[in-house]
Length: 311
Image (cartoon, helix red, strand yellow):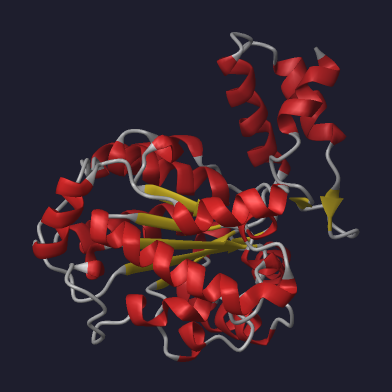
């Protein structure tokens, strides 16, 4: 019953703006719905609340600014987030919703897909492809500035997201709306091994993590995605046709970053002076590799739970 409800919600979802807006957007390329981007606040939020992720801060800020400067972009913005659990991927996707629509994930124009909820059955990929195409097309018709977030791509059935290929490129005309104004975000842990390996090598060489550049990782991440059996990007035409604008690597977090997460969470609770708890949380985490203990194995994911143990 739960699966049926999830599938029905995917197929029959209709944006809430009504028939008039749908007709208007269908004939107009200027429909922005409630789109009200605040890039200055987005950049500040990234630098204030995303720890140890200079690549994320730079790439997301630069690509959003470049994309939104164009009144009629030649292709959608497609960002692919990669890194270990707890490094900030989901948080950054929420920031995009908040600073583009002012409602984070609560906006009717920010759409999130989770494979275990929306695409749970491996033998129904053909039906899911048809549903996904119809659902994305319908939402783009209602709002050209739609944001689509595909979470946990490592759990997505292979071949499913390839149905999006016509929406992501510059040359295909799918229907009468400016679908090139849309933003797509893919989130995955796939690629974390190549990211973490480079971070360890840089640390062992005595270099600063800020010396890592996106070009050091882009090809490796792309290959890892394309060759990852079982992943949603396995042998994907989206990768093959180079339809992803930028790969965004999320680096593993050190104890210093974990403790900053702990301090931030304590400050939210009005306990920002509890340095003893900050230190205890940092010491309670597991770190890798075994020789060196450089990076938290779970990032900041379990910080809130650890704090509760030490209060």
